[in-house]
Image (cartoon, rainbow, N blue to C red; front, top):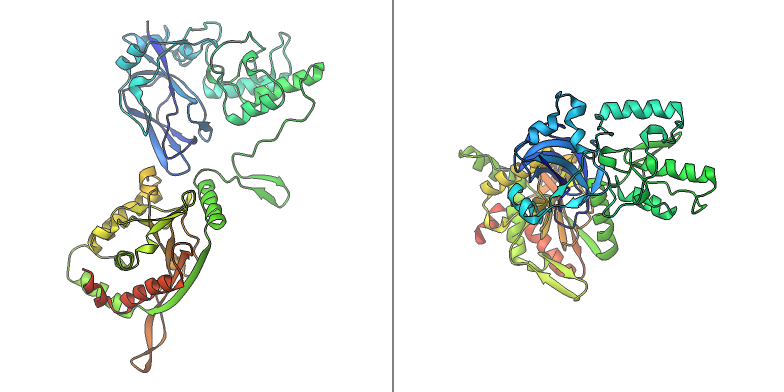
Length: 481
């Protein structure tokens, strides 16, 4: 007899509490191996493939693509054991029979830890120990086979048009109330749980229409409507409206776009930066003609091509060695400035999912060739959405090349909790006085936004002037190489 184990969304680290299902990598009925990726999710920091700690047959999936799940919510169930594949397939091997083992009642008995150690991989996914995952046994309900997702949608549409059935079942496949059970109640999202709590609805007395009895928002809303119709609603106030999960048109000419995922995280960080950090900005124009000639000479010498961003990063690390006050952060609770010896250089990268800031570790110890390769790798990962949380955190200083957007200047917002950011505009031919004569030179505008708590204008100006000197005369860098 196969044992059905439930795999929950693990702790993805970095304080993340939820993730959105982007793409399922397995179907119900598929055979999965231990640690095989089963779903791709997007957090506020990155795209992550989540591996399953159990080997067996997938008997149920929780949540469609686009659904946002909290950490600890069920992801899928897997039938493990010698006869798992046979049990999942059923006698006829039909799709409905394959998923019959996924249907259980609300009572779930805890499996032994020894069993979970045998079936789990023991690997850790950012704080999630699979070897300690408790196994759960499920009792099959033969009277309630699990329809596939299209079948559920068709059934809900049919039931919704037919109205309330004679046996009292709800439109859309909502089951009548059942006897309260012990243990956690499966709910699609915290918003649904809050909706029920604010209206005095006991979720333990409900059976959801989702997979494995998962309680959906529609289930709660139907129960509230039914209670109001019978005059038994516990509270009279209307149900709160949750924020839409995607861009919606609420009225003619008005579109609401929710701030969630990466965009929500960026919005929170930028707001926090403006709220906590007393920033100031200074800027200077620099003649980058010699820098561009130096880069051309380096690339003409053979070997991997060197990017302008890598040369600017090398200049930044040299400047931070002379002005370490800017490679720091402020501990507001201790009222201390924390200076860092190592430079972990972040750089702004625009992607289809929003603005991200990958971090080049130990940038101060890299040469221009190594910096070029790392910038290219992280940029490609950012565009593909495969950056890990570790590659998006831990920066101590940020380089922002907004010149790629065709603009000359900007006043960057500091990437909290860092203390400074260097902005670089486009490098374009402009009139410039060179050696006492007017000439056309390659000119760039550099801007430095800094936390005024860590240093004064003299330090910030000295840093920016040194950067400009290195741009105008790259030989100045030879002093620090």
